Length: 244
Length: 223
Image (cartoon, rainbow over all chains, first blue to last red; front, side):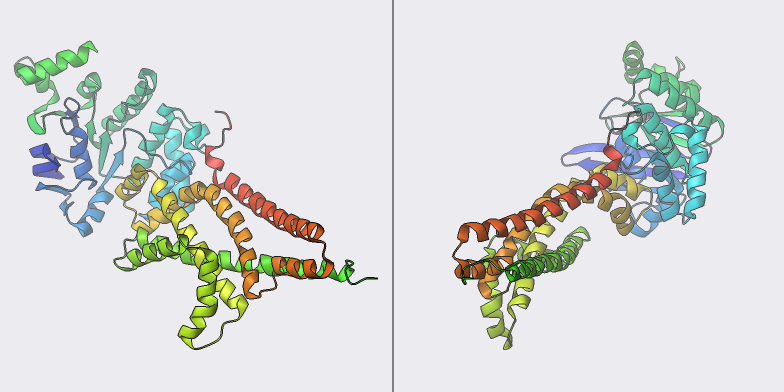
């Protein structure tokens, strides 16, 4: 369980997260929506310990991310896929995927690399397993990024706008993989601008507005006229997003 | 045969001088390399006091003439330590310190050149600072460092010629001796110069080959 309580994050004078409460239980697929600058990515970066909290607390399976020792344990429970992939450029796809399992989970290298190949094959990259990131397309890079996260066998998969650097075709290939993961019961927290996709795979939708959690509703209810759409801010947001 | 003529033995002398220069260059590069890298590690691990000391020392060494440093070590250090220093020892200490200072600067800037997001990613995946350094930072930083490092090494090779003034029988000192005897400066210094040139080219070649390997990942091989 990921438990966020009254999370506050400030950058200088601006308050990016202003008392966010959110609980994610195993098996859930939670989509975080909101305009740019609403604090979505920052929230994910707080969960994996990349940003220090200015208030409130976050625990991942009981491990407090504000405590240096517990953060290590918390980080083992989750894995992150990044907007700009953040692959290690000097390593092949297999090496990118196998590095953390070998170093952190102490899986024997041969085994980790064999597992990595299996994972890469499962996202259609069997042929590209020994390519360097610079030799892969954006969509292929992000698929490697997803494999790298999955190789850690995380209980929670954190996805930070994983398709926003991709063109529609590449976006589709990455979303197809995420849809499959969601269907297989992987717990996911994903920040996205792909409304249709969130509607398709999320079990819950959370809407952030200027650092505040505006609504937290089951997906069907969020899109219902008497649910999330009843709120002017959300209706306005969805209207804009579906036009573009 | 007149005493000003060249003899086959002069060739042996030149090769000996070449050996001394090359030996001092290699030894001071290794020692300076270890020293400079450990200073950079102090900074990477943010070791209090020691990291600042290393930075200050590097600052002093890289902003003062090597010749002045050499005199300080050769004439000053024995007074301070109450014991003699051979010219070779003094040369080794001075050159190693100087190489260390510049290597520190190259190492620090190369480490800083590795993208912040790379560090974040590795940390998020649970790796500790050493694992991040070893697997993510060092391989990329090494590739970034090769260009400036080649320049530094070629320059440090030329700098070894300064040690002739304290009496080390390096290539330059041999040149001085031959020049005084034969009174044929144009020939002597051309040969000496060409020998340095040859060594410098060799260093550049080796560094180039290493850089090529370290940058294998970004070479264009078609997709």
